[in-house]
Image (cartoon, rainbow, N blue to C red; front, top):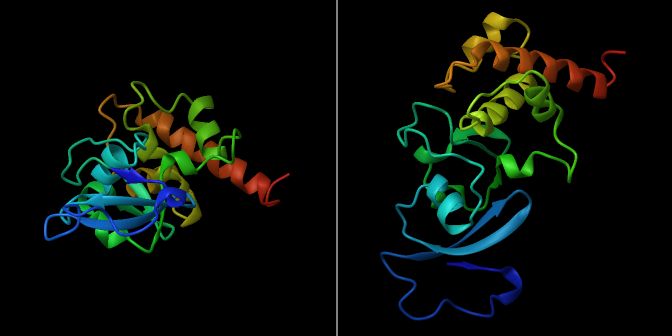
Length: 181
């Protein structure tokens, strides 16, 4: 159950709050979302099942594949291993929040240009990690990209194209920042 901020007028109805359910506010992509969750709900399940933000994918549900990569307070995290309640009061960014309106982020555009996906299932997590990999300064060589992106698995084995997309995204960001002509 998600309650829009403008429609929240008071406490949750009787039976919704207690040891098995709690009202929480998650700030996702710059918007507050009020929802009732079980305390054990993962951030991934809260995003997908309660907030209906399905861009973040559920892969292994064990933290091994990286398909669920999101940012909390501008740092990459695996949403399947993060309790939703632990993210309350923090800024959560999902793949839906990366673009600037209808304009794709340079790394998203680079993934399209380099064909950095095949089935596309891992692509949101790959893009979320790639952006941070570049921002953290870990994208200067293909070997470095392979190492710092190793937590994101592509079962289609599009790794060469993913590395190329990271390189293209890095260059596009440098041009935007005025570092390159």
